[in-house]
Image (cartoon, rainbow, N blue to C red; front, side, top):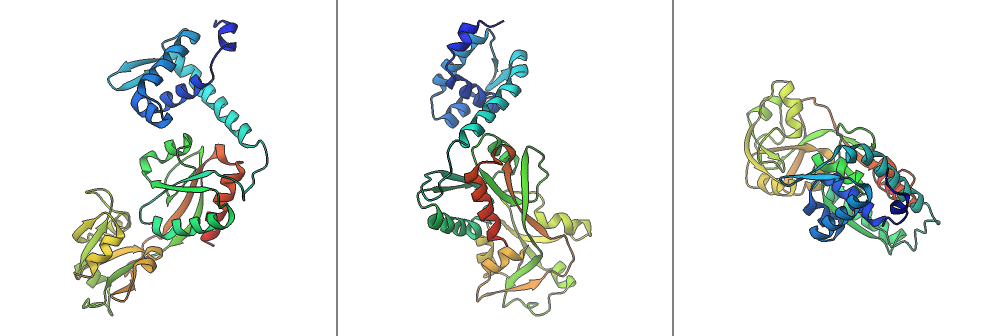
Length: 301
């Protein structure tokens, strides 16, 4: 048993360090997220070890592996810390006109220029002292970012995430084709023409199937790529110097079309792509984040 006196004298800041190290399993990364030095993280864990009479973590290369005692204690402790945050968040009324809160949003690169200016405009009008930070969305890391409050909300396509991550469908968009107005098939884009054409793929990954190809491949449609780039803005410029086709959601096509380009229906029937808003259930009752989620939802109505 741990001495009651030691618990009463415990510096609760140590628990925040413990929480971050347990989630990240890396001293340097935990230090970076807490804005302290790795040695400060190490010192905090050493003090906590003395109180709890357990090593808590053992080093395996760069990984800090939780001990059995740590594994048993951590879930309940982290849950209690999160509940404490929720209690503190509800103290006092949320004053939209006075809040200096920083709203943290993770969003897919393609959606950022479409959505972020509208969100910023709302914040400037209704919460002029608040700040907005947009960060690159990494799908594999989204759940962890939301769980550790690194971001408040995320916006991306429909993803197979489970509780405690919650989500709301914002919009659904059909795919279409964007092409140069000088393209020989601009007024007659048939399935045959589509299949015989060269295509441009957009992805942050250097290889692999892009989102529209999942549905096309199920129909036996294997496109020939002439280029692969990282952004739709770049793809738009490539269209102007080639006879390639770009397949994308109508939401994006409407943004990128100009006097040199044309939008045509996709000559195949594939499922539409949905845009979703994601957040952690622990922020469900946070008045500030509830306001932010409602405002984002209204942008798509």
